[in-house]
Image 1 (tube, rainbow, N blue to C red):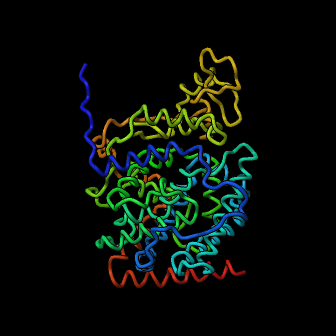
Image 2: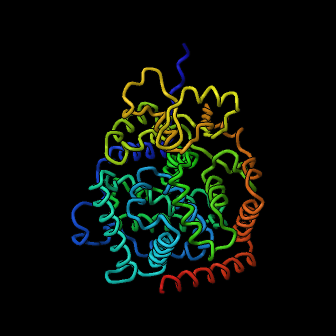
Image 3: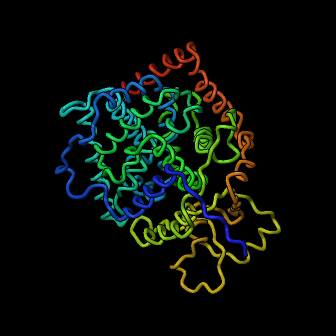
Length: 446
């Protein structure tokens, strides 16, 4: 038997891997504990005011692309199965009206962080303190209902939602990325924000040098978000659909399917490579082993919040790259399938040989139910051996599967983002964005 060569990691890859091993060990550690009213805010000892303000300027110079990235990141963060259930539990995002109220408020909070000085008593200081208290209250409430608490890794990965795409996928967002000092300042800005929201230094992905932060982002994309964004559950569609419906009157070229397409394009899921430079597509090498990922799943699976969606995490945390596709069965296959199925809470599942206790659901059955697969549907999993083979699956074939309206939404959004690289285009986008932000802030003030 041929023994595969040991992968020699670069310094950046070694640091990124060590970060994740430390992060994975903290799944049992809450982000905050105690009562929300007892939390006290303070600046980190490593706070650099000059660099922080430069990070704010990087946002103001590129806000059209950064805000587009942040909107797509909502979908990325909602793809976390446990976090999504906690969010659903709050009852503040499940309908169009509640989603509008929550996420317009989120936008106003984020605007304060980007636009105000971070000093005690300032709008941004009060905003960060309020958000941290809300997170702790939601965590405590979810824990009482056996949904688990908001952990250090979950808050750390939330940071990616705000800075990951602008950092490693700027060319798809119209963001200028030719100044290293600007990008370092943007990372420092989010290191500070993460600290203020309760992320400990050991778990703060923005406290490394730039190349390591970029590698950490690529590892997050490969091992978390590429699989998670392909496993689309009915709950994810419902919650994100409420957000899209809430913002549709205020934002052009918006629909659930177009946002999903653009987000998978940012993540790098094969089939969504519309109008981009293929030479800039990148997926990191396999830094984490099967044993390390399996150990992580075994560690979290008995815990509240993870136990109920264990099958999702087993599908997400794998050492191999996978392409997930839901396919309809043919009539002949479907008839044979129906003969071996049993009704479940959502659709049906295949009864496995030797299955004795219906309460102890096999992972495959639980995954079918979580994905809401019907009796005539199956989840096809294509295993991709390496990064080179992964590149052979890249194309824009998924675009033609969208409706004409959704295709137009995708094309227009991409065109608007590309216009940011011209002076006239940037000016036009800024004018349109200023009008949208004005309307959203007025809505928040009502």
